[in-house]
Length: 192
Image (cartoon, rainbow, N blue to C red; front, top):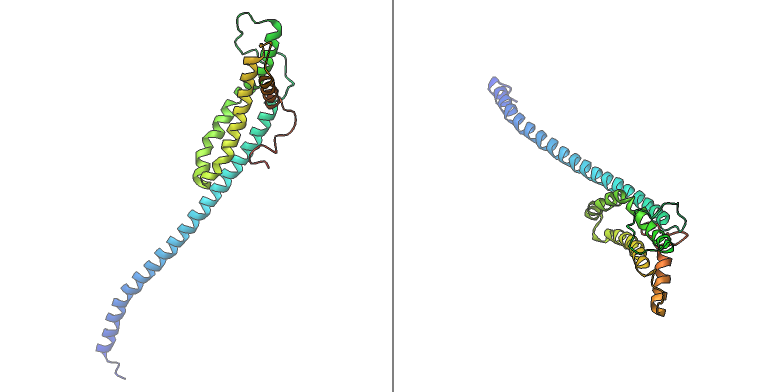
C-alpha cells in the first residue's frame, strides 16, 4: 500500500469534494425533516382549531336552546310586549293579548346580538366540517322562525271573532309553537 504524499493529497481533495456532497445531503435531510414537522404542526393546529370551533358552536347551540325555551315561556314579566306599537282602536283586552303574543319576539330580539354571532360562525363551521354540518343551523333557524311567525300569526288573528275550523286548528298550532313549556331537546339540533 502506497501512502505517499500524492495519495494523501488526493484523499484530501476527495474529502473536500465529498464534504460539499455531505453538506448538501444534510441540508436536504434537514429540509425534509422540517417539512414533515411543519406538516404535522399544521395538521395538529387545524385539528385544534376545528375542535375549538366545534366546542364553541355546541355551547352556542345549548345557549340558543335555553334562550328559545325562555322566549317561549307563557310566564312573563309585567311590561313585556310594551315595545310593540299599539294599533288605533285597540281595546285594553286586545292590548294584553297582543303584548302577550309579542313578548316572545321581544325576548328573542333582546338576544339578537347572540344570534348574529352564532350565525356568523355558520360559514366557518361549514368550511371545516362540510355542507351537511350546516343542517343543524338550518334547523335552528327554522325553530327561531317558527316562534316568530307563530307570534305574528296569533297577533294578526287574535281579534278575529269568528273563525273557521281550519283557522281554529292553525291558531291552536301557533299557540302551541309559541308557548311551549318543557324541553326542546327532542326537536333541537345538536342536543339530541
